[in-house]
Image (cartoon, rainbow, N blue to C red):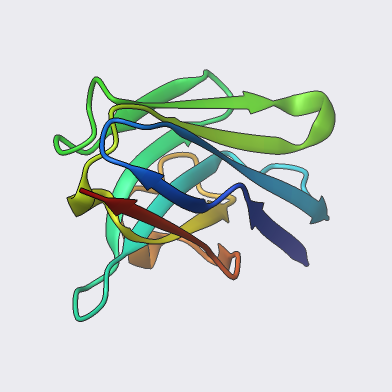
Length: 123
């Protein structure tokens, strides 16, 4: 089994920054895909970014491209999401996800999920 624990959420003003972390534990071998998703109240969970850990390939949703950056620390089994130039529309619960597929992309591709961390951006 795999456990994912997110941290780093909080409240910031428009234009501010936050750094989310996702610590993975358990059987973390062969987690080739990891991702960040978010869900705002009344909306579906949407993809923020994916990273394919073997090659370090990252792709971002258009809404966050140029503002958010995904990185990983393999030694610590930790995934990060650096969020800059935050906007009120970024307000959501942010979830970390992982899967052993080499190219998981959509929400339904991912088997393992964290509990989420709340991000609130005020204008």
